[in-house]
Image (tube, rainbow, N blue to C red; front, side):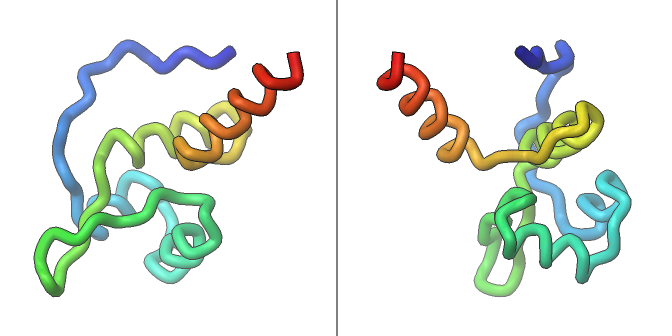
Length: 87
């Protein structure tokens, strides 16, 4: 089982430029990953601006470093419920 590195998780929203800098993909690739569910969805900051919750981006990077795909929390929770109900 994977344990997150012990780091202080900032509670901040980051804009697309910083997301792309951290993840290292192009903007079009990033939005395709978001659309396909392989990356976190943005949150609306204003009527014309979106941002991402930085710990979600860090979780995505951690997953990739471990050679696995990032999963939405709801997907992970669903898998746990299925495993428990099958036991």
